[in-house]
Length: 333
Image (tube, rainbow, N blue to C red; front, side, top):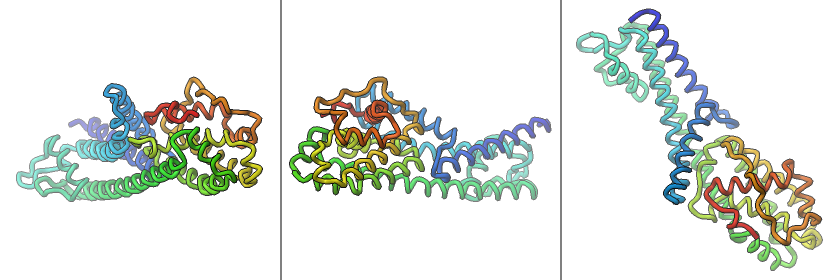
């Protein structure tokens, strides 16, 4: 093998290993963004699941997307690292030798050695040649150990966040399945106290979910097979309900002057995470109910405390609902 070719393979290998780690760190350890490779890789896989949902008309494809993409990300990081280290070893013809014959390993044998080095300490049938490659093999094994450990550490809080997300959805769903049913429920409570108490905890829970989505953007790809456990649908319902609150509710429960803006700001924060998964506002704003009144206190508070125009806000929520496999008609008043 020519020296130039060896240096080239080693250089490409170092770039791949470094790229895999930078992408992994950005996605799993910064808690604020996603690596460039992971973001595009995840979105590409998600498009396949979306296509499957349309072709087979089954929500199961949506439900399977999140777990599959999470597992695929871990395999992606490991495979990129495996390829990178393999190229580094292939940069030298005598980096790996057969422990019995002492002959240089073939290409597939070198790749085989690297795979075992990343997962264990090797099988003993192939060994590094010389002190330099012995040290490199130690780095390879350490790289694999840390990557696998941190990948598992990354996956555990993701699934915990999914459980918290579905619990929050179910909590919101207790109020009803649509804007109309929730408004009817609220009106039956003449003092509106129960709803005010409900809003006291809602902003903090929504903000926590928003932070989880920022830390683990893969959460956007986890969908529920039921409307009650779909956070996208439940948040859209809650956001609509807030603007339909009658002025009487504010007279009987003055704390709503604080609780409604807090909830509006929390939902706005949640909507800000959508750009991480390429979700854009729908082309058309969903229909407005007959009882909507821009002069209502609730509507004016939403307009005042939302950094996103109401029209854009509703189009974003419509896009989110449809991205999760549901229809706006399911929450319409």
